[in-house]
Every structure is written in C-alpha cells, then in structure tokens.
Image 1 (cartoon, helix red, strand yellow):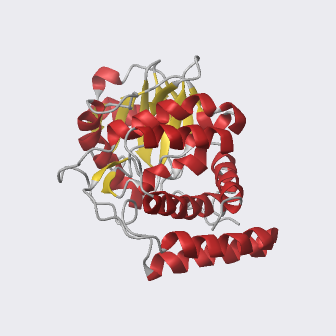
Image 2 (cartoon, helix red, strand yellow):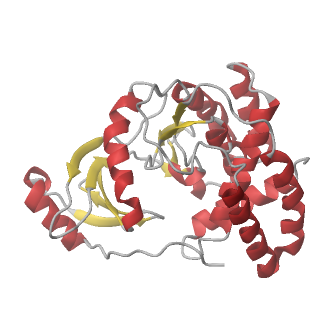
Image 3 (tube, rainbow, N blue to C red):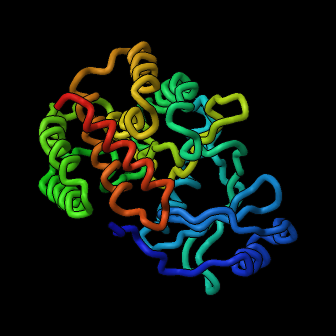
Length: 303
C-alpha cells in the first residue's frame, strides 16, 4: 500500500553546509547531522539547538514560506512552543527551493510513545487548541485541502479509492465498517462560523512531549491555514486511546461546548487523515501506525 510521495530532490549534509556557507555564514561552522525525513521535508540537526528544513518535493516548497511567515504570529497566541524560524533561505543554484533554519524543540516525539501513555497530554493539547483557534482575520495562508469542507465529490472519491486500497490489502472488514461512518460524518452540517487559525496536520508525529509527560511543542506548520476547527479536532482520534480521548473532548468542551456537527466533521477529518497515513507510508512506519490506530478507533465509533 505505498502511495507516499517520493522525493524529487536529494539532500545531504554537504548540501546543507554549502547552503549555510553561501547564505548564513554565521551558522556555517556548526556541525550538521541528518535528523529525519518526512512527508514533505528532509531535516538536519544544526549544532545543539537548531534544525535545517529542506523541501524534498516541489509541491512542499511553499510550505516553508507559510511557516516562516506565520510562526512568529502564532507564537504569541499558543500555550506550547513552536519551532520559530531563525533564518529563511532562498532558492538558488545549489538548491532551487526556499529552505529554513528553525529552533529545535527537545523532547520525545509523541508518535513514539505507546498510545496508552499519551493521556497526560490530553489537557495540554486541548488547551493548545483553544489558544490557537482564534479568528485568523485574513492573516493565514489559503490551503486547498485543510480547513475546508470534505463534502466535495473529489474528496469523497479519493477517500473511497483509499478504502478500496485498504480492502485489497486484506482489511476488507475494516473498510466496510468505515464506509457508512464516513457517509454519516461527512454529511454533518457544514461549518458556518468565523475562520480560525489551524495547524492543519495535528497528529502525534508533530507533537513533542517533555520529560514530565506534558506537551512541550507542536511541530511542522507547513499546512497552517484557517477555517473549520474540526480539521484540528480530528487529533482526538489520531493521538489518543478511548480514555485519553474522553479527557481531551471533555477539556475542549469545557472551554465552550463544541456542537455535535463539529465533532462529526472532526471524525470525518480523522478518517480522511487516517486513511491517508495508513495507505501511503510504507517507508514512514510511524505515520502508518498513526493511520492504523486512527482507523481502528473510528471503527469503534457509532456512525
């Protein structure tokens, strides 16, 4: 089930050192080591406290610009750290895309924690969402997918294609259970409120826990946008087990009750994202595991 996008540019520590020497000489003497590669970016650790982010796909190039522009605005709003940009690199002969140097937030990536151990993050993540979900007032980038309506023919077609892929890979019963749930949740009343800031990709591989088990930071803001809060509330199923999810939902609702339609759309978003991760990440097992967990959690929900 490999539909994950492949890199169209190869990066290396030598490339990073050359870019720093040409554009950020004050940082060029710091040691460079490979850190991670993700869906959109290759990451290199720079010294002890920085990361270099290089878009590995052309379609991801604009996401770096989104982060550089929006993260300084968001930092003043939210209750957890975000990887603030330190330097914005520009496209050039050595690397034809924008790139960035950002703060490294130390801690444990939440996707590496057993799901049963993530409950301590539920209150912190709910508070983070409340701090982020304030009116964006036209300052957020437009995202063609995240934050909008999933009740579109093309979104429905893509989801059904991925359910077919899931069934063909041996999970026919799970796919059959999820289809009526999708049909119920995606047809919930549409969002008609004020567009709020959204992370857009709020799953546990983008969350960092500190040594005390609390939320230390939220990473990877390339999909930052504005729109329906349900897109971010999907993290209830992406991140937690049933017990953690109950704490998270209760805490979110305590800040101001979220209506049933929004929670239904959140489940539709969780299914959309869960299928994307489960069917497109043979080379990124942490993301595949998030997707699988999400689908199983949603199959246990009432349609």
